[in-house]
Image (cartoon, rainbow, N blue to C red; front, side, top):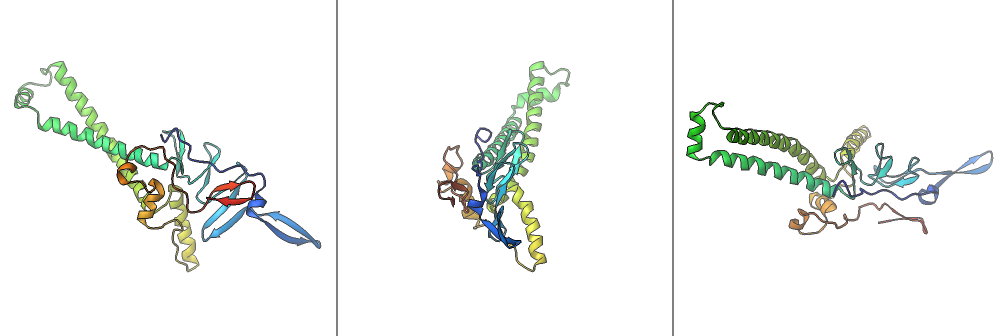
Length: 246
């Protein structure tokens, strides 16, 4: 689902001044109107105009250099899925990591179980015979189990670390890009003697619902085609009224 689902892209906007406004200056006694390409609606929260995509980037949106598109709530570009992970498919990506982690645990547990409950006869046979005397079928089974165990442990560690990272990001309502942006904002706020707080963080319960919605927890763990919850700051454009809509 993650690779086939669009993360979401801002709508094309030919006249950013109508949405973001214009600034007026006096030059040689005449008024000069200049389009505003950045609007701060809250501390560290901006609507910006993207000159490459000709669209207004809502808060948390970024331009992907791989796909050459702006992505809503962009987290990162995943080469394994050949797609960006963002607003529309982040839940699928998180579930994918969870399924991979649980699948690796299952393989490891199954192999350990098979080794522990190995029949006494087989144990005595293996202990009595040298590696060259074990028949081909038994040797193949041992090799397959060893390979599967090594692969599963490697996947468990790598996917487990990535899953833990994204669980932290979900609980704190950040994306991977925002984590590093917030580090810079925290440093800037410290220089200004201001306490920095993540403007999107609404507490871990609401942060989880930001990804999974209000569905029961057992439905959250299953694949679903339902749309993600509406964002805190709207990112759809009404071309008729020129207002930002949720």
